Amino acid sequence: MHTLPRSPLALTLPLWRSLATALAALLLSVSALAAPLSTQEVKNVRAVIQAQLAAFAADDAVKAFSYAAPNVRKSVASAEHFMAMVRGQYAVVYRPASVAFMQPERDGDMVVQPVQMSDAEGVAWLAVYTLQRQKNKQWRITGCFVQGTNGRMA
Image (cartoon, rainbow, N blue to C red):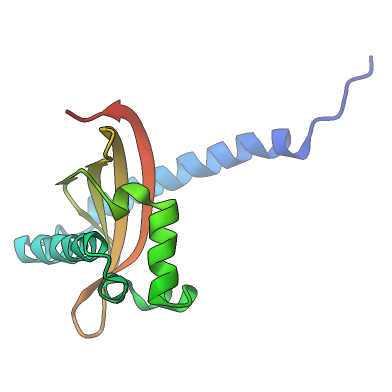
């Protein structure tokens, strides 16, 4: 009996699922062992994100860009390009209708801060920020992953 060859994607999809599951388990075990954030650290992390959101609301590209970690500033050509990227690819972060901070977690020298947001239409989103404390002790945003939650916020 002759069967059609499987596509390379079909062969790798189970592998990617297995890797993703293993990575999620590893991250959960690492975060379970990590030291909790102090109340002041939680406030400082939230303040950085809130300040960047305020800068987006004011269309202040330079200020918004200043809260990005060096790795982000290095990968984006300028504050104006950064603002254009956020406006185009992260509309809910650029102009959230509502923002609710969830419990942050330490992941090594990073902090993962989930933030529930809704857009102008009431669609719910989860923005997961990663932040790193810099040598000057300031927290800076190293990344933000945004995912729809398939729901609406009241």
